[in-house]
Image 1 (tube, rainbow over the protein chains, first blue to last red):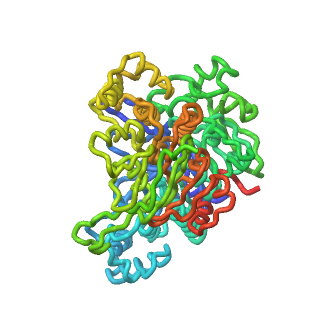
Image 2 (image 1 turned 90 degrees about the horizontal axis):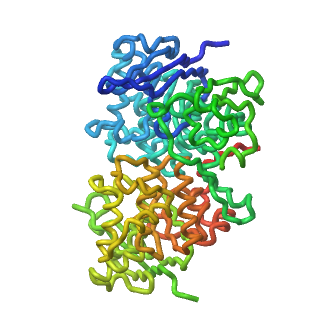
Image 3 (image 1 turned 135 degrees about the horizontal axis):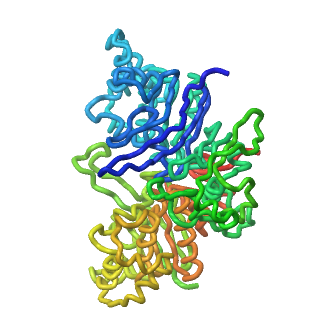
Length: 344
Length: 262
């Protein structure tokens, strides 16, 4: 088995403010091979963005990470600034939701990409770096790339800007791309184009991709594997097929049932369907006491009883339809009953 | 048949653009000769990409945006002919729910003050019992009356915003992307709440969204906008089963489904 591009072991991220320390991510373990896409799914406060940032070592002030993160053979948590600078961009790059804040309004698009090239290889001349930028813009589907390098971010549409940011992130061929809600700010038609582009480039470069998203629709169209986070902990992990066809955590089931679908009313012969909402609001690990963080919102906690409230469930192995696949869920119930009971 | 709650005929809106930057001196035509109506008790979904003019169109329904040409009749009255006072009366009847509840609620006012102000603005008084009943109709307890916006979650705040819209028993609610800023699990709660209001209280809805799946779920009819015009309109089921216009087709095809091909 080849070494994974990304390996995360027992990652904990905590925030300290006013002398109080609180975990926002706890006991997270992930393995991701080259050429594969892992979608990290969760709602606000689930720790998905913080996990992405911990991998880049781009945590906000007051946050600290424990555990182990290895990217392309490099220990990220013990790396010094010089090593980190080398890793960022060439081993691991990141694309954010808001492309406008990822670009400097004072620099043209070409300068952004050329800078990324020269930072990692100072021997490249300015002219050659600029040429790389043109090449890269062409690769991400920006028309007339030779003119586009001279344009400024505000002259681009949201979709074009996100393409430019992807060009900037991929120009040094990173082994891992972290995409944090890359299409959330875009129109659906543009979203479909950007997702297709990401998939295509991933195949071409053989890179691993960590896609952070709240949208099961997006996840379903790009992911190989899915990690569902709730309140900073792993709720469920498995192949896309296992997560969609035989989910083993009530939160996964509830989240999917709460997602509106285009074909919803066709199933029911025109009768208006109601979404199955999960009661309450997402909690963060900060507010969670002992026991399962999802228990207060879970329709099945009554069936298990006391245990859900006092004992935190650990991820255990669940049935999988993939040969050699790994399917984990952190729930005290070994087997979920029919959907109707899970999402009330 | 009774008169539609909202009727727009050949409505246009041209925004003047500062210094003729980009779009030229003629300004930018955001809405271009649109005719549209919402029947009483009906939910009309307005979809389109960003910049298609759907928010501008929705805001013309209650006079927040004044059309450059064309007529808007809300509840039988011509909005253009209304005085300040007339407009205020109109807005009793046509309430609005915006995308970001945190931005649309005053951070310095408790939920009680926010709701009381609605009544006061229309020269009415209210009782605590009425306010509690109002909160209960959107699924919130009486304890929310004393809370400030920062003390509640996004979903709870959007419920407060819906309660504020319901306060004066409107006939039409204009909801502009009411669930786009909410978490998936909470979004479903708010969508169900709005659907219940339409069913149980007979309130009409003009629901603006870029999300086709949301629109499909709770609109009787759908209008698709592109570059300031309505390019396709019809019953929700028909539009989504067999979209005719290329723009509608592109939107339907681009919507990712949380479903695997069999």
